[in-house]
Image (cartoon, rainbow, N blue to C red; front, side):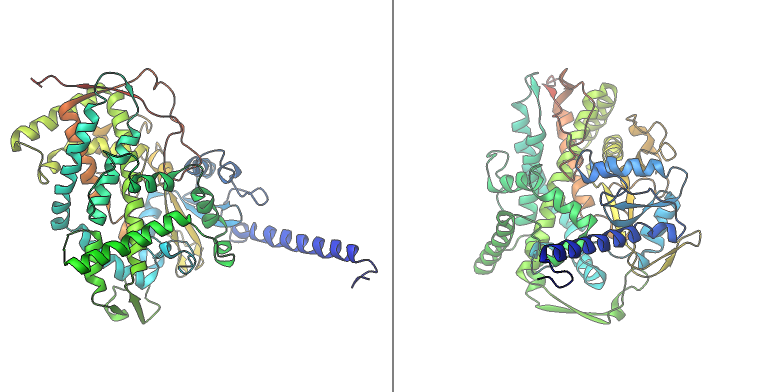
Length: 518
């Protein structure tokens, strides 16, 4: 006997139908979000949002945002729905500059929810909010000071010498895809400068750090679905306590940092690396945050006092971030720069001439000499314009704000800046798909070039990544000539199953050693 009718099956059907109708009405109400606020938006398809192909992994997420960007062509900003989550896309450079820098105190946080008990490696600088982020950012900035970077350059040089040896094995004029070699090289640099371990990836492709790196970016892993879930329906991760990383990855970073800490404490060994900085902070115990010591023009300070406990888990989480942010974005940018230089021989020759002049001046490549490689730096900048290492800038409105035109943005609103779309907009860069390093002879207009983000939350490892790229490319151009293989005649298509801007198909080169007279 049922509660509503005399048949429990009918009751179940009624209850199920009622729940479905309720959910449908709730989602339809969400989809009226921008209409109620008189903001132009891209209409969604039920449950799949404004651009279903991105949600369904048919195209890369940046290409999905590009479609939305073009549909909002005549707008300075506009709305769209990522699945069922309302998101405001900022298109205009002046508005971008305002949100990321001028009015940063209204957009301090990234719009992500985390549960560090379920996912301890999420307790890192990328996800941190408010004063906790402010404090940790200030402390971690010292890791990338000029003095620390000069020390790290010594480690980069050592890894570069090994990379050069490995690259020579490919310098036989035969077709070669060096993506994995570049990934192994940057893995060695990050492992050495971040964890203080002896680099082995270039010599041993199966080294544990390289194995971990492969798993992080594996297209068949859970990382992209988790990213989309985190981006589309973030509360589900919290409600259902969903693990964002595999057990293997969690255990590796937790156990590795614990082992390194134990070794440092027991032996007294001191290294000027990422782990050492955290060890020195940890020895002081907890550090109180007094809101009076926080720059209120830069950071949300709603909480008067907070305590950050510098635990081993905090170190592990930020070590994971250092590894992830360091190796994949840097190696991919190098990969694309090799591609463009091989494709444009006249640009490669101009860069090589500059490289060899600087080397002749100093006798070898020093930390200080790298900044004189103006044209080479422009080449890398142009690569990052076309294929930015960071796909998007994400912010959350942390307190109600009126945009430059007076439109009210509610607290909690998610904001995104689609970096690739901004970089490829002909209004910002003429002939955007043409590779023209000379366009960076003058600084680009504010709000139009954001390869590492911008404002107080700009990528903290920006200079570290740049030094790796400058040093590596200078050494390569000094010794080798790069050509594209006939196999590399296809249009580059991004892999929709990974977050980074990685091509589906490999880029093949033919590498030749230069004559000794060169």
